[in-house]
Image (cartoon, rainbow, N blue to C red; front, side):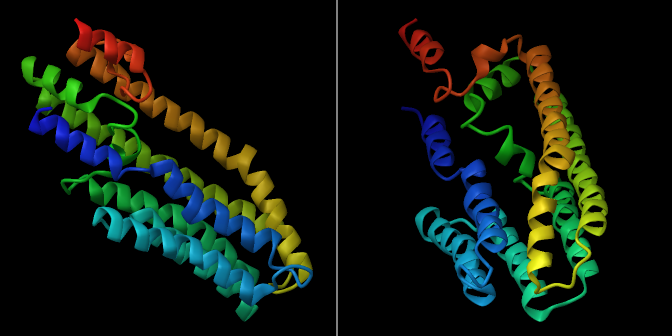
Length: 249
């Protein structure tokens, strides 16, 4: 195994973007919405349990892979704000502000990351768990098109940030429309659940369609610059048959 392949394998072990989202954001949100009532955990215990997921995952990632998990930190902040609004019985408008602020912060982070060596678009889409990055980089070098691809990768990052801007606006509108009861009440928790259910068809599905469009744009760029088909550049973990046939040849 070459040194480059070893670097890719090491990078693969430390990247779990969808698991990050599940543990840091989805599970804590479900705990706050479904188990914070008096019949279950109660507001304060539910907040503590919900916070334990992103906090524990972030600590595990730090000691296991030596990296700071941005999504875990974001989930920790989001859960703390949501739970805090209910515990402190703040006006429901603060919930709308918080719902808009979280995706806005992510979108801003995506933009800022384009000026760093670790743009977030690489973590979620252009990473060794989705695409055979090592193979793509070799082909780009052979065609002397690395600079062009970097420009298109940055453009994909801008589109990616735009999806979070869309989510930010829609989250605010949805929260202001549905959550009208005082925080800390059963009606508030019920409306919070309704907002979450509606967020899937209203926000999540359009955002996923936009994400798929960005991935399509990224793949079209790879196809134009390397000549490879999608099947030929999928990660070996996704397309082991193609990978093994290449190794045999």
